[in-house]
Length: 494
Ligand code: HEM
Image 1: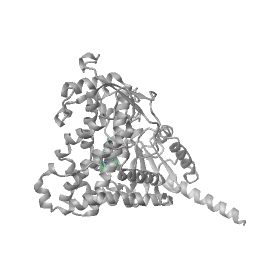
Image 2: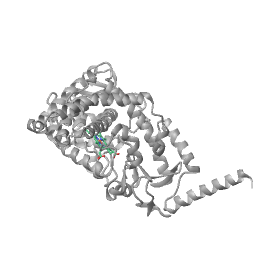
Image 3: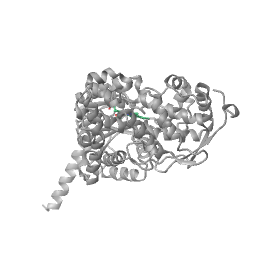
Image 4: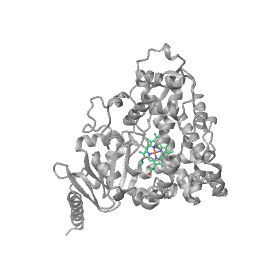
């Protein structure tokens, strides 16, 4: 027989074997020819900054749970809250970041809380969780110092590329709180070498995650290696310094006098452990907080009545000048609703992925009705999107889902596992309380100072950069307007 015919037959057999294997687990496959069709469409969506919309549209078309096959690697895409709950909580031990992610993250994150599973993750989580509960982290003076510098960037009535300044701000607060010394980017016209190197490494890492199992095909450039070196060289003296102080002496000083790194050094004297956790926390905190603050001001600019209502609340609690401490921020119930609503519409980590660590199941998505369990082989990936989940009309039945309406939170609570901006289960964001404090502090300081805000473009920003964090592709200019005693303004009653 002609060798070409033999090759074609073999290929056809291989293809059918793939289809059979995928169908035998009970879920519908939505990709062809080893997933090349899906990869082509996904690549286009990423290039056009439409990835989250692409995922949402495919779920609208194919239902809440389906499978794709990326060059032979099966991936379940699910928007079913029961499946997400199984992955994140009910069957927690059966799912994790997985060995591929751990390998691709090794040179950046090492054995950190962000990248590991099992015992190593459990130990890191235990140590960090305790530190994040400390009141020491609600350091109002530290936040106020950097927020004052951020406020100084605003010229009332002039448009400002806010995200650029917010990145500097969260870099400064992050280094201050973690290391006890800020890199002071808000005071400098240029970005410090550590943050620049971190930006480069994060961009490279985002490309690795997009390639998934095939991340090794991305070349490790000289600039990447130099950037990793810059990051390590920057952190090294801080770690050396923390390790040079005897643990007893650190403990005697008391929590208030210690940086987060020194707090960790009281619990572990392992150099690598300290480096890996500190860097991961900085990465986990910086971009998420900066982008959430941008979305906060952007969305508030689209609803002047909500802004005025928030202003009335903030001024009634702390006045125009009062420092919003933990107790004051706790009193601001409407501010809480504003942040919940921002994270509903713009969950800063819009898409997430997990890996089956053993042969296992998902409770739903199989069979003709889609209500039966699915069987998964070890190594299968599971992808879910908080952005799509927050727009899933099975769970969120209100008609105005795309409307920014903080008031809805007065009477409405999302069904469990249908609202996940912080993720859920044992791996829920460990910095959530710290992040909420920072978000509330900055927003209330701005609201105290400015009577109204505008944004440009004024059309709804719906085009997002192709990386792990939801951020706009176009510079979003925000204009803050000064002055205006609260009594002079037409403010709706609270
Ligand atoms: C608005 C701000 C933030 C949002 C929306 C956010 C959201 C999230 C989400 C969705 C995850 C889960 C990621 C995953 O499992 O793959 C996560 C994990 C994490 N976050 Fe945050 N985060 C924010 C701010 C922060 C801050 C300020 C810190 C630290 C100071 C922080 C530290 C972490 C860490 C260490 C993890 C890993 C937890 C683990 O795997 O056990 N985050 N965050």
